[in-house]
Image 1: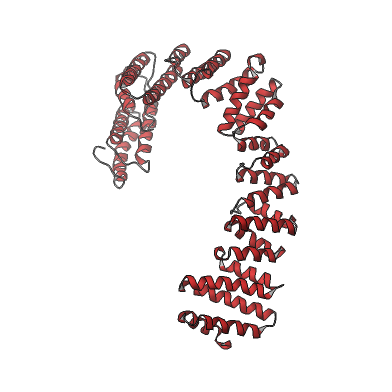
Image 2: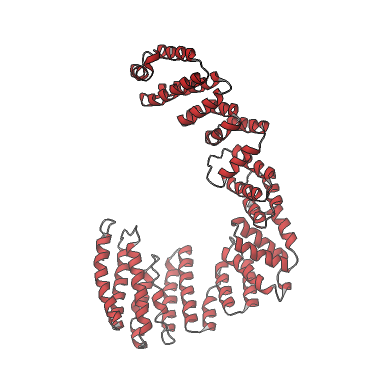
Length: 497
């Protein structure tokens, strides 16, 4: 496990290590847990060393192997009652934990060996290393190290049933909001809810960036306390924290807790009014009212504010359709299309079909004009096939503008639909695309011939064989310099040339 281990050799190493681990597994099965634990511990130590020396563990194979060894080590420790042995290997485990910062969960080994005899040694060691880190590390690095060390120690004291010691460690260096959140969590675990709530308020009063964990704990505790002592929960403080959380993101579970708190202090309507008017995350505001099945308010926000994301509008449109609010759903669907939406995966496919079916010609014409003005080829390609049946003339207008972006099969369908009323319009569409294809490259000649076949069929349906002959003769004359194209055309349509 020493030396440079690159991506291509890592699995050979892991397979070799698994043979060694197999020895420990067999020892564990036979009840020889001390011997097995020595091997597991050596493998964990080697894994950390490999990471320190720059192993390329892109696939996570070595990490998974080390974590498995830690798990098996802990199973051995659960079977060993010899406290002196656990105390004996403690220093080796602490050294591994101190060096490991690769997400290998090495601190888990402490939970299987901690006891009243060695907990103070663990604390002394970890706080001593933390003190050393304070002198040399950056402020960020020190905070990170402190958080890991204190969280580990509080969990260890909890493991051996020492709640006061656990709280003592949680209060280590109360410097920022996250420190206060840590203390509040411990107090909550001990059911000391009012103390925890007071601790959270002190943390919130500190200067600095908002703390997600402190904000969430505030409402978790407020949800508990408001049932017996609603006077402890201040509306303004609660509202400020709620809006801050909802500005970051909308979470249904967190939102339900907020509503429960505001309802309990008879301020739910004020909360929703503030959310409607003041929440910076307008997508979050729409999601909240959508979650509450208040479609009218969600739709009102979308109509008033152009910045709502298209995916949110689609969600609201789908909900409106499901509730029978067809006109509102169609309006929201058109709003998304006018922005240039080009994806008809569900539920948009259903919404788009319903909108086309329900809209009158003036509405569809206005929509097409907006799409042309914006230059949204993807949106046009969504609409064209759907307009072909209901409004072929509109599909033809879109096709003319976005002819080069369309699949050639779609051009054909539109041309045939338009030609039922105006044959020359259908032919003109085909000719526009043919001209583009033959100018691009000879590799597109096949598409041109395909469209010429469509032109022939359009004339044939109307009984205009003479016009077809004139068309193809003129086309050959105009493109006689493209010998390969003419050769293909004579082979395909030679009878009329």
